[in-house]
Amino acid sequence: MTWDPETYPTTIRAEIAGYDELQTRVADATRGRAVRTILELGTGAGETASRLLALHADARLVGVDSSAEMLAGAARVLPAARVSLVEADLADPLPDGTFDLVASALAVHHLEGRRKAELFRRVAAALVPGGRFVLGDVVEPGDPRDAVIENEPGYDFPSPLPDQLEWLREAGLDPEVVWEQRDLAVVRATRPHPST
Image (cartoon, rainbow, N blue to C red; front, side, top):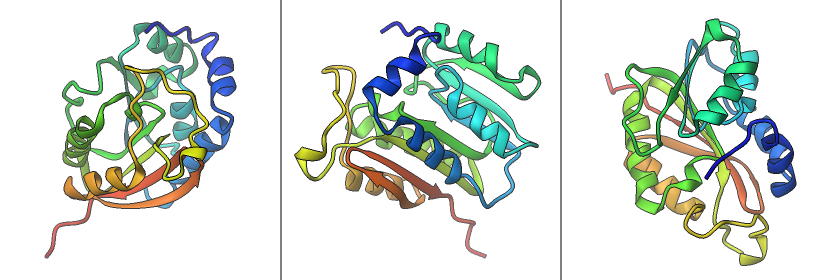
């Protein structure tokens, strides 16, 4: 699928009525700890990255996206001195290094079920002890009447929130749901410090 970073902001807001609130909730879920290194999965046109860099003034961000067009758009709006952009798929190995924060908004639902679980294991391994993973995404709601976002067959694979929480636990993270609205949710998952 080809994305246009110039039209994406208008398109996504038309498709997802709660887009701006989701972005705010994702950013808010990263507050409360010192963040120097951020890995963003699904950087898109740079909306989430801009919010994260504004909140964490001393942080550097590595942004990953499978779309060269979207990364080019993000490069135009993000501060080059604080950002490295990598063209890669979420199924690919994550960039080298460890991170205080891994964040993703509206990208992980493009992975089918257990591929999310595999990604969550790689995210856990990339987090420093005490680090956070903040996931804001489309989920399969418990009540089918709450499924208001149109999903494209073969491209969108939202999973039930309880399944994703279990996969995060299996990966060694401590997850908590910090916001839910119909078929959108934000989860904050922390990598525990090793027992002493």
